[in-house]
Every structure is written in structure tokens, then in C-alpha cells.
Length: 249
Image (cartoon, rainbow, N blue to C red; front, side):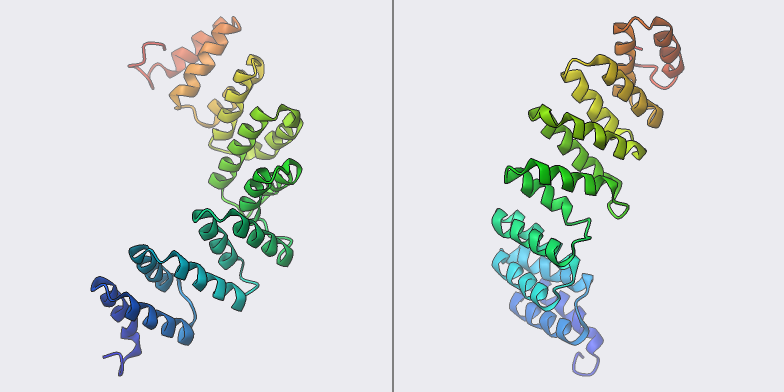
């Protein structure tokens, strides 16, 4: 059928995969990519084959060839960085990230990888700069920003001399609507023994997610600890219907 109707070729690839004829499938995928350009669907099938055969070397080689042919394609660079990292080749991953940055100095997404490489390379100043770029970017999803911020908090726990940078980052992520970043900060300040700032950030988290029991509990306990008994009564009364089975309320 493919000889008369090329549209059937992708279906033929899926049949090759089901029958474990991986070489034939890859050959057909290469021909399709050459004739029509790459597509997400065909890349998915290609990765199915690499996963089934343990073909990490072939996967990397395919991505390297694509990057060489499309040096301005940021997404290909990022996939190559991810694959190098997955295989534990941090040097190649780091070098690829730096190469992408040199070609696209205004890229934001590359800093999602760079900040970790800079930390591993004992270059905290560049790592913090990359973190700030991620946190201020409109192109990066909130979940990714939250993960970077959590890493930032963990880094400052080990390196308290960079706390001012953390405070600056706190201002940057104040638009986080989930409250996750505020919870991370509250926990950080609790460990530092600063209950006042911990309570402040727990209250901010509570204002964004009023049905998070752990946040509610910690706010109540900190109110008790700071002898703000009227606030304890008000908050406990307010959330009693939401958490009727929680004895602490």
C-alpha cells in the first residue's frame, strides 16, 4: 500500500514496532523525516524503539545530527542536554548548554539546566544569576519555577551567606498563586529559628490555598507560640467545617 499511498508509511512504522522489526522501523522513520521533516509523533515512535532496544547511543547520535543540521533549534539542544544528563555525561550536557547560550544569549529555558551545572561546578554566582532569570521569565511554567526556587532554598540552607539573594528571589516569586514557594520559605525560616518570618510566609501560603491542612496547622501552632490567641480561635473556627475530623483544630 505504501508504494501507492505514502500516507500509510507511518502506520507501517507502528506495525514494525509491534512486530519488533526495529531496524526496518528506524529506516522508515529516517525516510519520513528526510521527506517531510521531523514530527513529534515520529519522534515518539523513535524513542519507543530506543527504549525497547536500549539504543541510547543511537538516540544521542540522532540528536547530535539534528543539532548540527539545525543549530538554531533551541528545543533540539534542550533534548540533547536532557539525554546527556540522563546518561550521566554531565560534561557534555554542560558544554551543550553553554553552546546553546552562546548561540541564543537571550534564551530563558537553557537556564533551567545551567543553574544546576553551575552549582555542580562550584560557581554559585552564575548559578544564582541563572535561577533569577528562570524566576523572572514569562516563558517558563510556574511548576518549573517552583522547583528552581525550592532548589534555591535548599542551596541557601547550606550556604547562608547568599540569604540576601534568596530574599530578592522571594520578591520575584511573590506572584506564585499556589503558595508552594511560601511554604518552602516558611520551612526554611523555621529551621533558622525565625518564627516571625516563618509565620509571615505561612500566612501568605494560607491566603493562596486556604484548604491546605499542613499550612493551617502550622499557622495555628505559630499563633499559639506567639500568644496570638484571638487569631487561633478565629482561624480554628473558620476551618472547623473544612477539617471536622482533625483533632488539633
